[in-house]
Length: 185
Image 1 (tube, rainbow, N blue to C red):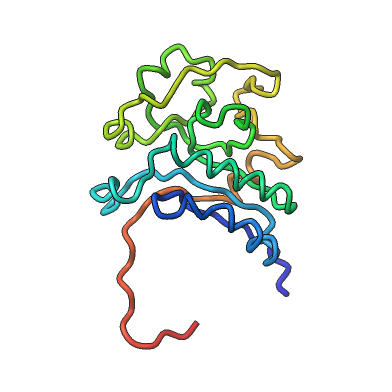
Image 2: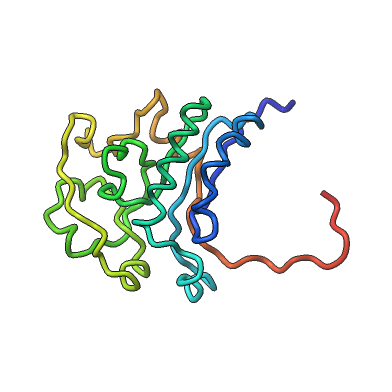
């Protein structure tokens, strides 16, 4: 009723990635304009619990890509934020621009490193980089233009608008204490 554009972000966790495919239907039915699945950066208390929270990306990314495809069929614009481009394969164009993180040994010499967010440094320390592999730039759409991310103009949306829509997502932060008693919503 307020004519607001509603977007949704789902932080990828060990407990959420298997159920991602059910979300596009729900989000589309609620009028959500766009959706992103954010690969987390560990912070705060979640840093200590990352082994229980953060999924192995090679296992989770196929579920992410499947959910994004389902979203597209339902007319819901969808992206993944914070995933290394090599794990997205031919779906790398579905990557939402994010700040660079850390890179493993396989990332040295990767043609996509300039535009790839890499992985969380804690993730890299925990799992090494055995699932990462150099990725060749294959199309003109992969090539950075004027220093901006190649996906910045995807589907007619400007880079700044995408950043504005999905601001501050993908960080695992401490969960606030639940209030006691009844809470009015």
